[in-house]
Image 1 (cartoon, helix red, strand yellow):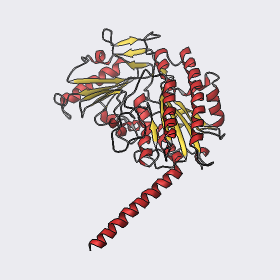
Image 2: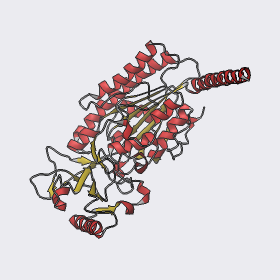
Image 3: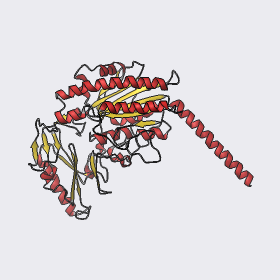
Image 4: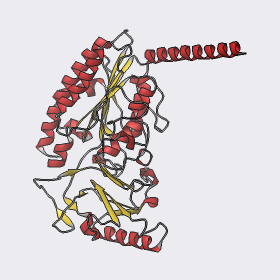
Length: 438
């Protein structure tokens, strides 16, 4: 009996080893496609039409492109990046804003690095889990990975002072170092991020001369980046069938801001009131009521929400205020603990700010300190939130106007390029373009 059991165990172990080898072999074969995905923060779709930018002209001549990439709601940096990476709505992945409060943990987060806050699987883990070695640098919520599955290369925290050129070079340096080590399975998904047009858009507005200069700089940086990436890929290439794809996307567009709203003053709430917590990013505000003083289902809670809602709707044209359970389902935004009991949405031209010694609403105009540009608005009602997107296969000329592209199509499209299954939380469909055909 012992001999029989031992024989079965050996057979099972041998079978698992063989299956693992075959699995790794098939992944290596499928992973001969390399994808380099760069996110360009705040690059409104029409920016590419504002000048003669040689690299973007080349993309439009050789790649599948669009200036109508529709972001998730709210069109804010962290939620948008996380939705594009996971293919999931905000209520699923849980990153409701750049700065948000979680009623479950009673913690306020501001531009967090901790990747464990992400509640849906991003493409960098989807790929790594399926054997595609991945490097991800600077992408929101890719930092400080601690789970059982982690990418080969990631950072512990974001350095906001780092120049974009250095960000791009660091990603390529990581690729080069991997090649120098002669890793048996090389990197096949590389993801990076640049601030690019976002900062001048906020500071100076989307129609400022600073945007044109930022686009000129970005165009030159991406041209150099792509040239060096091609050289690294050629070193990695094993067969003539190997393919290299560049994916360029943005998280949102930008609109001119003329009015700054102070939520604490408007609602007559102390900034650090222990019973009423406020959290804002861009044009989206959250009001969390203390569960002891305002228990769910109580008349006190409903009365306070009615009071705040009436105040906001009366404050300005097209101001909106929703109880969490009453938000439009199409937004996919009603996260149970990271959305407030009341969610306030400001229309185009308005944004939230903390004005300590001023009236509730302040005219910003062309303020030297800004913001003079903002995003976060619903792309269904504000087309200025649409962004730029491109898929370019190096060595091929396949120009195509993609038309309208949804944020939820990016994750499954990159998964298809890599020959892997998308994350279970990714519900979108891959783009139907010739470049995806083998």
